[in-house]
Image 1: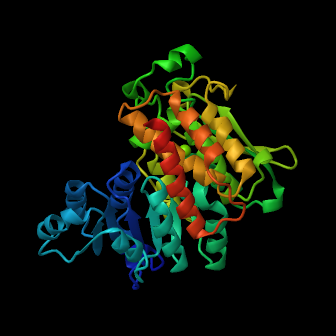
Image 2: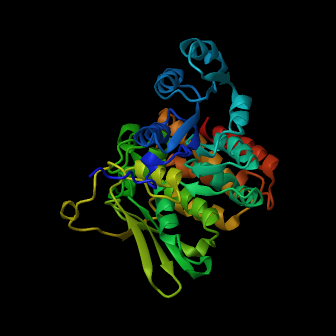
Image 3: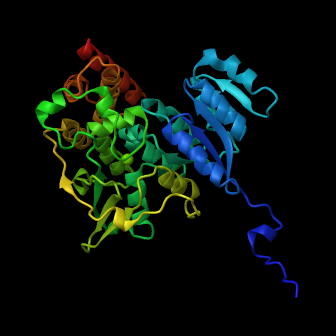
Length: 400
Ligand code: MG
């Protein structure tokens, strides 16, 4: 007998399923590229509206030819003609420059903006996206580090969600789904400890750029890999967590977990704890943020317990890794101090990557910049921009 079609099933639904429409700003970086793989695997769930890149026109062109978004933006204006010509004949609008980036996130057809660019430059497009009512899949942690209070208030006023893509924050977010906010006592952010976890202070003096870029567990962009080696990444993540989950600094603890299997823990007021775990693969938190509140099937490699017979934990060494202590200082001081910390760190990382300073000079530059920059207790958006500029100048002057 012929089976009647299952009318409730998606395949037989008369109405076409509504796609979640995504803009990826910073699509040529590590997170952006992995997000495109995730979207490709779920073409029946996600539609691609916008791709943007700062400088990498070649990769942007290749991505646009393959995924055919509605629009692309190339930050570097001098590449505009090349991108436009390469995409001629496709229904892809091509724009260039910073203003175009800030405007494109406001497009009516976008549901969610994945902020995958690196550094302070993520702030303004995120502000514009929130103001035009888009949900944010936040991979650009610097936005919340610099202006967490401002951004979280703005998101509340505009009734938009900020969904974390950072693996630790995704873990905490996943542990908190279904819990009352008042039930949370504290969080434990896990840190791999980076490639220099077991080095002495003397050894740290001489580490090279190449050694710092060789992360044991995670495949990431250059800036975040250096931040991981110096533990600044964990410091920035503590500040990010503070704003995402509305925590006091005392409620945030860092624990080193070299296997990077447990992505973070939460502890509730009754003493119970939850952890989220899985193999270290950024595609997982990207998929979770884009699909929220649903979970979609994935082909990612599954965790095998016998491959990891022991999961270990240790205290973070804040004497060796000063950046972590400086981050907590900045978080406790509040105001524009995390913005100062972030700007000085961006300058210091850039200088280390171009072999202008040694590894241990980074915390020295950051601390000195924090001492020298003017403190503002209640900054607005313009204050953040000015602080960023001023801190960069101070940090640069300490390098030259
Ligand atoms: Mg992380």
